[in-house]
Length: 406
Image (cartoon, rainbow, N blue to C red; front, top):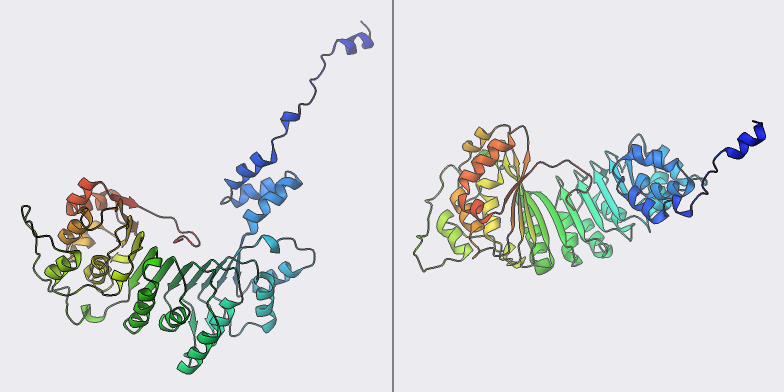
């Protein structure tokens, strides 16, 4: 048989179908599911130009600046050949001495992101004075989420702070605000001056000298605040307040099953603890979720909110639409929980009763530390039997992520 005859017998390959190419819309959805997997995103970016442009927003939407990377990253971003600047939406600035940074670096950050940035996270950033903090935040007109962790500044004169906050309007686009481990009074004064319409507020630990200004903003915001996270500062010598010592709890008043006299939540708290609830929190009638950080902290009664401030704040809530309560727990062992004289009967009563929180469907314990989750869950189930019966108790071990509280 000749070669020509053999060639004629070779089966014909099927024509390429137009359906063999996956529609770009489906490819985009697949890439979207890989947004947290940088290695997979890098591989996808090498497939074709279409995939390159689709992966870029996921790979570069968050940029982190440190004192070492500040200058190199800014040089890259401002390079005429760079194409990543339009896709950057979040920046994180960690450990930068802003007061010592070159003026050129400050200007280049603001110039690059002033009209596109939506998320700003400052960690351990040091400013010269509080007005510098105000000016920097106000430079970004499209901010939606602002998170400040351990941000510091040199003490400013009260006149400087007043003039600064009156002249600089807090960005109206910001809806989510986190203030952790930093001076709160000046910042809260700024919020109060401009009636900032936040929906999410995460603040703490609240020091005694910050409490009044924080309370003023909460009263002002009222029903508009939907999600509140808070914690309180370390208390010296075990004294939680002028009217209460956790080492000497008052008697537990328990209502009889057949009693027709129904106490309001504030009255019930006063009957159990002997003091009044927080007058500020009652104005937050629109709350949908509440989170208490450091509710239990390694069996340390001076740092655990469960001893006093946590129950006091929770009993002050009058939001009928409250659906979720998160209690942060850090423990090395289950036994550490017994060091704290927590009024479990009170908590079981207020969360299990639909009279107080009729829409509550989740009492979530967020667990940190080496404590055994199963053992902790068994202990909580025994301490809060009515909540277990209502079916609202949940347990969760989180993995940290940027802006995870939002």
